[in-house]
Length: 312
Image 1 (spheres, helix red, strand yellow):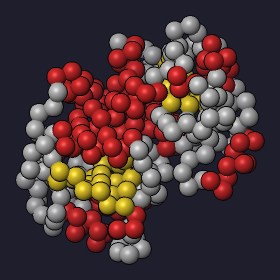
Image 2: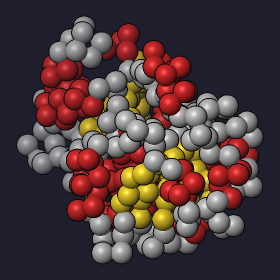
Image 3: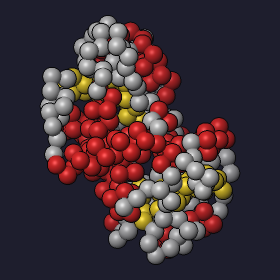
Image 4: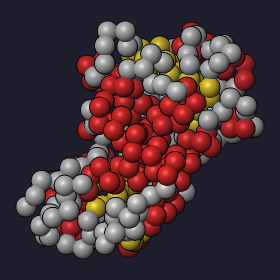
C-alpha cells in the first residue's frame, strides 16, 4: 500500500507546506480550476450541521472534476450503528478521500488510523484546520503578507482558536488571545505553538483583558462563545464572557488599519453586535468565500501521491 497523508490538525503542515497550499489556492482562485480530481470520489462524512463547509467542499470537488457523496449522522452512525474502524475500512474501498466533520476529534484519529485513503478534518471539537487556511489566504489578500503581523483572538479557547494558535507562528505571525479565567487555550497547545514559531520575534500570548490584547493588533478575530455541543452551557458562558464582545469600539483600540475576522455563524448580541460582519473593516464574508479555494488546494495536496493507494 502506498503511503497516504491525513490532515487532522493544522500542525500536520509545516510553514512552507502551508504557504504552498495558499499559493495553489490563489492560483485556482485567479485562473480557475483544472480537472485534478477527475475520476476521484470523496466521502463527506458529517455528524454536525454545516453550511460553509459542506457547500464549499461539494462545489470544490465538482469544480476539480471529482464526485462527492454526503453521509449524515443517520446514514452512518459513527461508533453506534457500526464501529469507526469498520466504517473507515469500508469507505476506503469506495472512495479516494474521506472528509469528516465530527463531534469528537478522537473519531477522526480512529478513522485515519484504519482508513487507507487520506482523511481531512472538516471540523472537530479540537481543531478546524480548513477554516484557518481560508483565514490565512484572506489575510494575505488584504494585508499582502503574513510575516510580522499580529492577530488577536477574543473569546473562547475553542477549536478555531487552537488551530489559529498553532498555524500562525509557523508562517511568521504572532498570536494573542484574550479569554475569561478558565476559557483560555490549554498550556500544551500554547507550548506547541511557541515551538512552531518561525523566528524569535513571533509571540504567542494568553491574557485576560481584551483591550490590552488587541493593542497593536493587525487583525482582531472572534468566534461564538458557545460551540455546537455546548448548548447546555450557553447561559453560563454568556455571563462569563460579558465584556468580551468585539464591537467597533474594541476594534478601534487595535488601531486604524486593524481588520476584523469571524469564521461564522455569528451569535449576534454575544460575541458581536448586529451589523458587525458588515463593518467596513470586516473580512468575514471573504473568509467564507475562500473556503472554496483553499479546500480545493488541500484536496490536490493530499491526493497527489495517493493516487495508487491499495483499496481495503
